Every structure is written in structure tokens, then in C-alpha cells.
Image 1 (tube, one colour):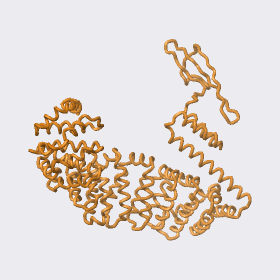
Image 2: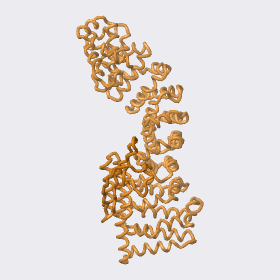
Image 3: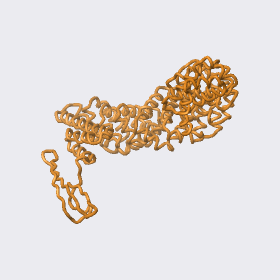
Image 4: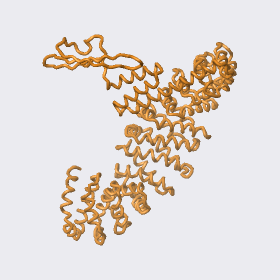
Length: 588
């Protein structure tokens, strides 16, 4: 092996030749260095040389793969571990490589043990092989294959028989049989054909039980990718149920989940899974449980983000469902999954930009309002999704934001704490988009309700409530006057200034400063320690610069409204602190 370094001034090259030899299952590396003038042809111009580097992770990957093919499992592991030593950031990839080694070694051991059972004449092993030979007969009637498959399924009791199914071409015998293939393509038209389909699905479950190599071979077959989602969406309930059972079995392990994500048609799979929302029994919950398990996988999340234009119509269809004829608990699970995905900025933008998706959210909210008690959980999950959509600005339209706000204002009359909190959360994100929404909120008595929120406590609810008050008081004098009237001597707002939540403190100081514009409001604070509190905040090292900025502005308004505070500010050397906050004004 050699590395070439060119001295551009004199075309002088230094050559380090690394000789790699293979002996006793290991590589031996020797370096021979030379330096001199040679015709410079570039790396590719030097014949019969192999570029290598002892820190080249790609080389160790190929070495590990080669050793795996030679069944040198321990050496293969060492090669992959070396990759991790060279580059710890490749931990995820190395974990997957090592998992492949473990699975291949486990499968190898299974195959040796199964062959030993067959060679020793074990009855179940011999019967398994004979059944497969019988089923390999072509052009028999469908019931012949259905009966044989049922018997074969009963034989799949332990690892030996499942492995013999694999090593004796069981998957090919079943999947490539023309009669069986026709039964799959025409399932739902004939009772016998349906029986064949069900027999094969039960066989696959038995064969893949606790056997990851069989799972791998089943899913990696090119005909399985489109087949399983198709069977999952079958018009025959029994076929759908058995298809779901098979996928649930595969999804029990991380390896199985990766097989599903990497090799099945995920759009069709998603469509099939959400169609289970129409089922009133536990199958709907099982389908959503499977979708939840897949959605937690990083590979699925990457696929979701890149495929969102194709996925969005499916999700919109979920929102358009009538909760009266939908499995409520399963619908809540599905909405929660959508809410989790909408927390990512790219998904937010695309969802929020879709008028159809936004309209579907409003439509489902309206349906839930018809029976608030029955659909409480649906509304709660839906509000979480809408809250995330409202992080994007501008919204789909001002009309949409206004309609969402009206529904959330109505929900503020709910007796359910979770609904109240999330409704306030949505409002805290929609109010600032339009003065019309603020006016609507003031007419609905939002100030009084938010003061009640703050008195009740709770960090999340308080954060939303004080932001709403800050927005309202920032725009309308009537809102400021109502806060002054409802919060005597600003006891509620003053209490918030001691919080460790900087966002909450920043909005509380903004609201307090706005209220100083109400006549005699500042005077009501003369008996409090408001000046030292605001000075401390103005001079703090808070990460949210709005804390210092709003505290400084509130102090300025306070001293303007009540001159006695200005004298106290000078006594405390507060002018120097306020001058230091000017840098935040200049940078804002």
C-alpha cells in the first residue's frame, strides 16, 4: 500500500509503500518508505497498487464483511469494533454491523443443530422435510396446499423445525407456488382461496416466531414488500387480522421493526393501519400500537419527514373521520402520533401550509364539540397537534387562526384541566397573529379567566396565561385596566417574578410594565419591593434577554408614572443598571 504526497514546486514525491499480506487469518502490514524523483502520474497512474490506511473505517467495514462471509465471527466483530475506536461517532452504524454478526452466528448455530437433528432421524425433523417435499408438487388443487400448510404449521413447535423450513427452501416452495400466488391475488372472491391465504399467514407466524433469520428472509423477499400491506388492507376481516398479527410479531424486536421500515411499502402500510380505526374492538388499538412502535424508530421518522407530501393525505383522512363511528381510543393514539411528528419544524411547516389539513383539524374540533364529554380524549389529543401547528407563522390564513381561537375560547369554559391548559396554549400562540383575535378574546372575558389560571398555579398553565395577558395588555388599554382591577396591588404578577422560568418572568414583567400606563396603578405598588425586584431582573444574566429588557422598560414606566420610585431608584444606584440594559435595546 502507498500514500502519495506531491511537492508542487519540484514534482518530488514521497512514497510510503505498505505491503499487506494475509497469513493465519490475519493481515500483516509492513511499511517501506522511499523518496525521489519519479514521473508524476497521480495516484491512479501507479499500477498494481492498493490504497489503504490503517485508520480507514471503510477498509475495516469491508474486512468485517469479508470475515462475516467466511463465518469468522469473532474476527468480524474485531473489525467492526476497530471502526468504533477510530470514529466513535459511527456508534449507530457499528451497532447495526455487530447485530448482523450476532444474527448470522445465531442462524449458523441453529442450522448446524437442525441438520444434526435431521441426520439423526428425529421424527419431527424428518416429517418437516417430507412435508416440504410434498408441498413442492406443482399444479395441485388449492385445498391440497391448504391442508399441507396447516399440518406443516403444527410442526413448527421449536427452533429446529423452523430452521429446517428455512434450510429446505420453505419460503420459496410457498411463495413461488403459482396456485398459492393466485390465491393471494384473488383473496376475497372464493372461500377456498381465502383459506389458503389464512393458512400461509398462520404458517409465516409459526415459522417466524422467535426466529429472526426467518423473519429476515421473509421480509427481504421482493414479493413480500407489496404483499403484506395489501393483505393488511384486505376486505376479508380474518385475513386482515392474521396479517396484523404477523406484523405485530415482527415488530416485537428492534431488528424486526427495522425490517418492516426498510423493506415494506410504508405508504400502503400506513394507509392499511389507519383503516383499522373503523374497527370497534382491540384490533384497532393493536394497529395503532404497531404504528406507535414504528414511529418511535429513527429510521421511520426520517422516512416520515422525507415522504410527508405523500403521507399528508393519509393523515388528513384521519382528521376527517367521524369520531362517532371510529374507535375513540385508537383515534387518540393516532392523533398523538401525529402530534409528536408535528413537533418537528419541517413537518410543522408542511402541515400548517396545507389548507385541507387545517380545515380537517377545525372539522374534527367541531365534531368533538357536539359531545364534549364523550370525545374529551379526542379533543385533548387534537389540541396537542393544533398547538404545534400554531408554532408556525404565518398560519394557513387569518380566518383559520380566528376560527381555532374561537373554539379554544369556548373550551376555556371546560371543567377539564387538561383541555383548559391546551386551549390556553393554543390561544397563547394565535393571539399575536391578529388584533381581531385579541378583540374576540377580550369580549370572551379572557383576562379574567387567565387571572384565575395564574391564581390556581401550575407552571405550564401559568406560562400560557401570562403570555396571553402580555399580548392583550400590549395592545389594549381595556385589558390593562382589567388586570389592574382583578389583580389588586399586582400580587399575582409580583409572585411570578420569583419564578425560575425565564419565559414566564419575561412575560410577567412585560405585562406589569404595560399596566403601569393605567392611572394610579404605579402608586398601588409603593408599599412593595417592586424596584429592587425589577432591578435584580434588569441586571441579571438571564439567557432570555427579554427578561432584562422588559424589566428595564417596566422600571422606566414605573418611575415615569410615580416620581417617588425614581428617587428610590437613584438611591439604589439603579441608573447604572438601567444603562447596562441598553445593550439589549440596541440589539433587539
